[in-house]
Image (cartoon, protein in one colour):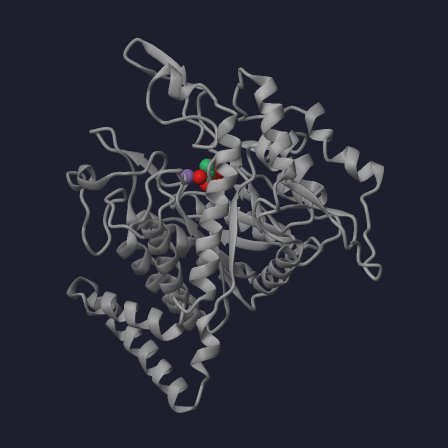
Length: 455
Ligand code: PEP
Ligand code: MN
């Protein structure tokens, strides 16, 4: 029965029509489906399934991000480059959440500010690719576009885009999110527990350089305890999800109308970002994401002009709503000190306050002579330092960090306190896409960022 006190606001016909306007525009990075009837059937099924996240949570995140944009909070976003269906196991999800929570405690201390925690999780299944096809020997097949589109195995059957994967993506996201919610609400995330894990990291002789900061955090926690802080209250943490808003056959059917106000909300995740390759001002993605209410991000590479930036703001944040728009810069360590400052100088002349986040991963890819796609830990740290330096010089807020990481002990990025070298990469390289920081490298990065934040 409908509650007579509840008013249900529907979307206006214009708003509804607008949600399909992207179909008339140039669109990049979508799969070439062969069975279009099956895509339509999968879309219909997705459109009937419950939302994965709720409009109220999305609004709460926008408030949190508004604080970060003002310099009163810091955003930590992290997770796989490409989540896989096979990787959605309890152990792997737990390890990733644990790593993010450990990083967040270190960052909270360093920043003396709340840290907004967000996984690149529960939906990071679709990937943009530099080529539509991949050739091995004399065989050419469609490129792997992420588990929600096709399989990684290099066979014609696996590489053919399969619309049934759209629905499987939803269910995998739902079970991942269910576990993430359980871990972050059920006591696993308690501050004392997370702190004791971090002490394990700091006791490792390889991490001796972080011992000072680790001891300071320990003293702070002892002080809180002595002063009577209620650690029971610190057992639950807010944790949000985000992924690249790329695959329109997944995002469109999961967009719903908020019955409280008639506005469209993407319910596949709290936060969606538009990638560097799909952020064309007149393209389908920018149009679509301009019409939904979620906080959204845009990746900005080193070639971004001040004009691009200004036009993205006009299109995606016309009302200059705090927390609505995040710029995730991914310039590369060698370029950030030249490419970011002009954008920051220009933003000061506009009436906009986007949240600035650094992605120190995507501008720092290298391929080893043996063919491994990797990144050097030192380049990642250098880009983070360039990000802080640029913001300090401009007087703007360095508001967060976006990293590709896993909680497992993989060997995908070079360096760090374990000194992973080129020969070691082969021992445990598991990513199907870009190389991720492993558990130790992630914590080490958090300690280094904490030092920047407290500088
Ligand atoms: C990514 O985040 O995995 C990605 C593809 O990034 P970008 O759009 O910055 O290249
Ligand atoms: Mn990536």
